[in-house]
Length: 248
Ligand code: CAA
Image (cartoon, rainbow, N blue to C red):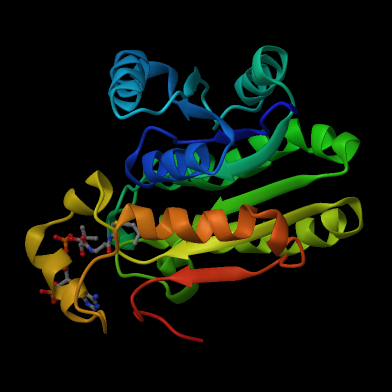
């Protein structure tokens, strides 16, 4: 029996991350869910909850906004579980503010966690993928990276940047057996969207053609599609999963 391929999911214990971890575990991957080092207790509780649901998954602390910590994390995953075959860059935060109120901190932390993290983590697993002649990199962006959003100059910039990264790295991976794709969720039922003011969220959802928010499992399903062996000819795409909120 060959060992299961390893899938590393950054932000793996979050709303969308959890659904992606569960789906990849169901699809036969050895799943390692990354979390921020400050979330150690939450990660242990998460792992127990997942075990209770029948999922045998690993967790690993790592600050993806730091190159050095991302390298340490990638090295640890490789040593403990094997080379990363699937990387899902899902770690993300919001610091929503109108631009006139946006302090430098709110700009920088969102760019660091949402965009620079994609370089930090992917750079540290890329050589494993090249050596293996196989890899899947999935970047979880956002509808707001495609269309912009009032109050999100920082977030939309980072999310739009992710797809530039995808299209470029997809070209470098194409002849090496590695695909690189983006999934752009719309408004999904997670703690991140729940943190929005109710009236603002309700107004946005009223404008979604499907008149509802997405479910984390619907994002995980798009990830599973892009990860599947049979979809190895799909690379450099930005797959929207947004209930029709933005079409192009
Ligand atoms: N377009 C144009 N004008 C708008 C507007 C819009 N979409 N929304 C608000 N305004 C106007 C208001 O009418 C108001 O005008 P006046 O000053 O003339 O009265 C002004 O802008 C200020 O509006 P707010 O009261 O909303 O400002 P605020 O400072 O209280 O709040 C904000 C600002 C927190 C950024 C709030 O606007 C907001 O939450 N926006 C939505 C941000 C959002 O969509 N976040 C998504 C989080 S989830 C996520 O990011 C996941 C994902 O990928 C989808």
